[in-house]
Amino acid sequence: MIIESVKFSCGCECDLGDYKFVGFSQSTTFRYTFNEAQQGTVSHRNQDVDYNFPACKSGHKLTIDDLHLVHGDSATTFTLYNTKPQVLENLAKHLARTRLTVTLELRNALVTLDEFKMFGQFVFDNSGKIRRLDLSQNKFSDEVTKLAAGIIARTNTLEEVDIQDNQLGEKAFKALSDGIQKNKSIRILQMKSNNPGKAGAKAICGFLKGHLTITVLNLSLCALKHTGAEYVAEALKKNSTLVELNLDRNLIGDKGFSCVVGAIKSNTHLLTLRVESNEIGAGGMKALAESARNIAALQRLFMRQNRLDKEASRSLAVVLAAMPALTEFDLGANILAEDSWGVISEGLAKNKSMTRLSLGGNVVKDAGLVAISRALQTNRVLRFLSLEDSAIKSEGMKRLSSSLSFNQSLEELVLSNNVLVDEAAKFLGLGLKLSASLVRLRVEGCKLTELGLKYLLDVAVHKTGMTDLSVSGSAISPAMAKLLGDLVAINKSLARLSVEHCTLEEAGARELGDALRVTRSLEKLNMMGNGIGDKGANCIFQGLAKNESLKSIDMRANGLTDAALGAVESALATNLALTRIDLSENQIGEAGMQQLELVERSNSYITIICSKAI
Image (cartoon, rainbow, N blue to C red; front, top):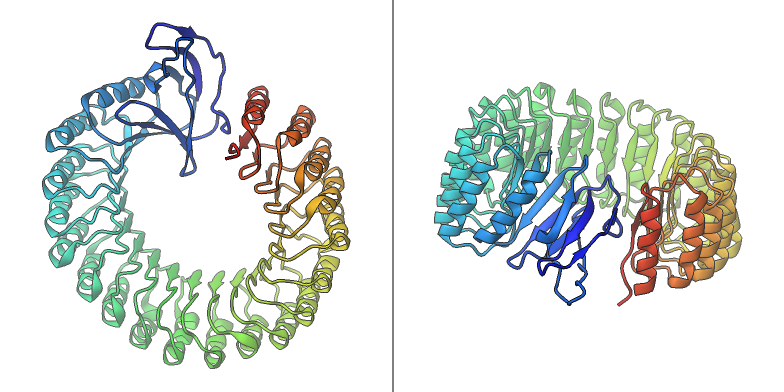
C-alpha cells in the first residue's frame, strides 16, 4: 500500500509520488486507525506507530481523509474508536477502494446505542468486505451487546469474531450465543476474559453442540470453574467441527478436567487442548491416564502451571506411554519434584508419537536430568525438548551428553536460564559434538563464562548441519568474539544466531562484520543491546555490503546515532538480500529518520524499523 497523492482539505495540493510510511514495505499488513478527528495511525505486527502527517503551506493539518490510498496485495485492518457518522462515511470511502476483505476493529469505544445501531447497519452494508470483526476491549452494556449479536447473526461472511476483554456477563453471553448460533460462516471465536457465569457458559456450550463451522474457540479467563467445564464437556460429546479449544486460567480443577477428558474420549475431531493454570492435580491426571488409550485424536496438550506433583507423575507416565496421537505436550512450570522423574522417564522411553516436550520451570536438577537422559537413549521420535529454568547441574549434563550420542532424533534443545558452570558447559559441548541430530541449541540466560563459551563455540564452528544458536545474555570477550566470527564465517549451515546483550561492543562488531563478508548461510542475526556504537555499526554494514545471505538483522539499543546511517545506505546500495533492519531504541534524530525514509524509498524490498530519539 502506497500513499499515491495528497490533496489538503484547505485546497492546497502536494504530490508525494511513491511516498511510503517509514519502516514499512509494500508487502506489509497495515492498520489504518480512525478517531473522531479522522487523524491517522498506522501499525504493524500489533505495535502502534504514530505517523505524523505533514502540514500544508498554510499550516493546515493533513487528515487521513485527504489521502488517496492505493491498496496492493496486502490485507488491511481498519480500526475505529467511535462510530460517529463522519467516521463511518470516511471509512466507507476507504473500503470502496480496496479489492480485499478486511479486518474491522472497534476498540475501547464509547458509543451510544444509536451510534452502535449505525455501526451495525454499516457492517451489514459492507459485509462482503469484512472477514474479521474485532469488538474486544469495549465493556459493552447488555443493550449494546444485544445489537452486536444481531450484527453477527446477519453478517454471514464473517470468518472470525473477537469479543475478548469485555467483561460480559450472563445476559450478554446468552444474547451473543443466539447471534452466533444463527451465523453460518464463523470459524474462529475469541471470547477470552469475560464473565459468562453458569447461564452464559451453558448458552455458549449449548449452541456449540450443533454448530457446523466453528473450529477454534477461546474461553480462557472466563471463570468457568468446574461447572462451566461440565457444560464444555457436554458440548464436546456432540460437536464435530471444533479442532482447537482454549480453557486456560479457568480454575476448572480436577473435577472439571475429568469431565473434559471424559468427553474427548468420544470426540474424534479435537486436536489441541489448552488447560494451563487450572489447578489440575493428581485427580485430573488420573482421569487422563485412565482414558489415555481411548483418546485417539488429541495431538497437542498444554498443561503449564498446574499442580502436577509426585502423585500426579505416576499417571503422567501412563499418559506419555499410552496416548496414541499426542505429538506435543507442555508440562512447564508445574511442581514436579526431583523424585518424580524416574516414572516419567519410563513413560517417555515407551512413547512412539511425541515430537515436542516442554518440561521447563520444574525442579529437574541432576537426578531428574539423569532420568530423562535414560529415556532419550531409547526414545526415537522426540525432536524438541525444553528444560529451561530447571536448576540443571554438571552431573545431569554429563548424563545428557552421553545420551545424545545414542539418540538419533532430538533436533532442538532449550536450556535457557540454567546457570551452566564451566564443567556443565564442557559436557554440553561434548554432547553437541556426539549428537548426529542436534542442530538447534538455546542457552540464553545461562551466564556462560569465557571458558564455557569456548567449549560450545569450538564445537559449533565445525558442527555439520547446525542451523540455530542462541547464547544471549552471556558476556562475550574480544577473544570469544573472534571465535564467534569464526563460527559465522566457517560453519556452512548456521542460519540463525542470537547474541543479544552479550557486551560485544565495537571489537565484537568488527569480528562479526568481517564474518558477514564471507558467510553464505546466515539469514537472521540478533545483536540487540551490545553497545557497539556508530563505529561498530559501520563494521557490521561494511560486512553486509558484501553479504548475500542475511535477510534480517536486529540492532536495537546499540547506541547508534545519525552518524551510522551512511554505512546503512552504502550497504543497501549493493546488498539485495536484506529485507528487514531493526534500528529501534537507538539515538537517531529527525534528520536520521528522514535519511532512512529516503533509503527505504529507493529500496522497495527493505523494511527499516526505527524510532526517533526522545
